[in-house]
Length: 315
Ligand code: SAM
Image 1 (cartoon, helix red, strand yellow):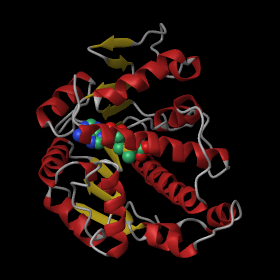
Image 2 (image 1 turned 90 degrees about the vertical axis):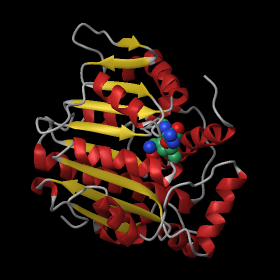
Image 3 (image 1 turned 45 degrees about the vertical axis):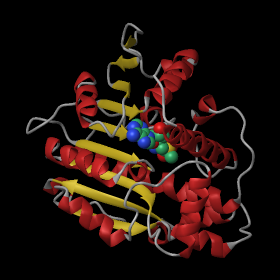
């Protein structure tokens, strides 16, 4: 299988995200016993970056918990562009391990993730069946309740086939479904991302979608962000408009309700204790830079069905 240079650059964004997460975990921003298996060594990142990642991971987690609180653990989670995310293992160690957890990314990423899982008992033992087996089929990993499948999210047919192979229930009888898109959709052309989201909204009548990604890229700071990425070969093909436009887009694609906040609003809504603890970890050299970063990332929550309608920053 060959990848275009642009795909290579997009795939490399996973290494970035994993490095930044590991760095922040080492500095005590949050706990993640599993991230060290996925990346060996990392250089220290700037405090603004660490704090930005904290808000990102904490905000995603907060809404994941809200989702599970509302529907229980007999649900499915679909992690789009999962990269080396460790959420599955972190949930397994909590009381919130879910019925079926499905991860999708380019095969170049999922095959590496699969290799790392197979090599590390601590990862493997959390996914194996009762008889300790995991199945590798066409390069994809399937086990009871955990599936890691390679596909191109721009090819809806492939995504649908892979979701089916991973046992994702669809339609009226589908279990409650949480779809995660953490820094992923923005790399897809808007038409491809729209087709994917329209399908997911239609397929899962009881669902919530969390989208974390860049926003407000039209201003000066946004232009610099775009230029820096493009210097590394990554084109942000997606919309990345203001938060209100992102929410409107999700409603237009078939979700009943959608809200979107920039990360500045998300940060202010975090519990005081959390913020105070994190603020004490490192001195911020450039407060202005953090403000800029926070206003150029957003978290959107889109829902279908009334049970998830009240998911909110302050719920
Ligand atoms: N969600 C993970 C996280 O937040 O840690 C990884 C984020 S990383 C910035 C973006 C991920 O999206 C990469 O792993 C990349 O390979 C994946 N991705 C981007 N476009 C994709 C596509 N068309 N098909 C499959 N995966 C894609």
